[in-house]
Amino acid sequence: MAGLTAAALAVVGFLAYQASANAPSKADLAAPGTTVSPAPSSSTAVPPKGTTPSKNVTALPQNSGVGPRVVYSLSAKRVWLVGTKTLKGLPPRTFEVMPSTVSPKPGNYAVTSRAASVPGSDGVPIEHVVRFATVDSVTIGFSAAVNGKLASPDPNKRTGGIRMKREDGNALWAFATIGSKIVVVQ
Image 1 (cartoon, rainbow, N blue to C red):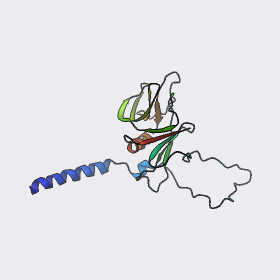
Image 2 (spheres, rainbow, N blue to C red):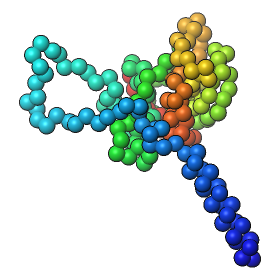
Image 3 (tube, one colour):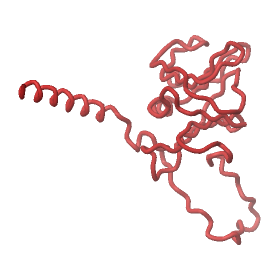
Image 4 (cartoon, helix red, strand yellow):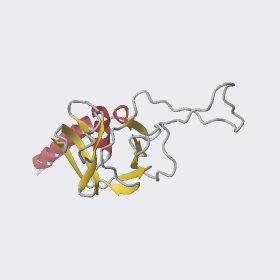
């Protein structure tokens, strides 16, 4: 009996090691080169003369929900991975995406299915497919082209693939499992 218990513990230990070795690190999930900017200390901050304040395009959109979620801004063509324990203490990872020709309406969604690799609806081999909506029979989801390109979709085809760079696809794949919250904002 002791031998069987020892063997079971060895298998569990090996599987735990294998899982931890394949888990993404904070560095993998954090945006490359991301730094935390301190908030202004008072409302009297004035931009230098002759300049206009710039809008921070990487700032998380207001009213984009709470809790762990993927935020997708249609107008900014950008995604944020927000609020996981893995990212605790770090700003949300954000990256640019190439929208599909068919877009979801703003609202709350959940990841409904995933695929490690498939051919895209445009014929391009894609990986880390995370699907979350359907619009007029077109499935909408995030993916990365295996060739690493972030090409504009053919405007004459109805496609639902929101493309990203491969490293961003890896981070989103690790983050957005089945049932994960997706918030689409204008």
